[in-house]
Image (cartoon, rainbow, N blue to C red; front, side, top):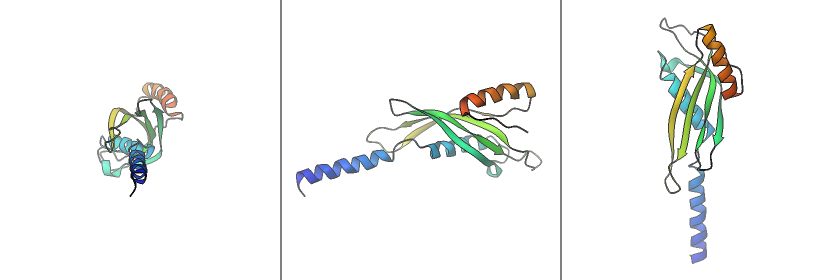
Length: 137
């Protein structure tokens, strides 16, 4: 193989390796769901819907943002309680140019509160972070 072909092949392989190292919205949503489900009485019974990742890309390659959605979980009696909004704030950073993978960090997580006064404030914050309306039952 000529030196030129070898260099071109190496450059292409490096490019393909780097493409797989970027933080993805799908991974962020999965991590957000897991982080919030871990706080439930029965994490395996949690049902999610309307999930999305509102992201901000930074110059250093890192991504911050909010995983927003709705979940329905079982209470202490084993009954589902109805859908409630949730938010998980996270940060994702590529491990480096020559290292495969991404480092994920959960910064905060919250569920829609039951108290009417707190719920109104939560809805305002949710609307701002998630660009959609919060629900609570």
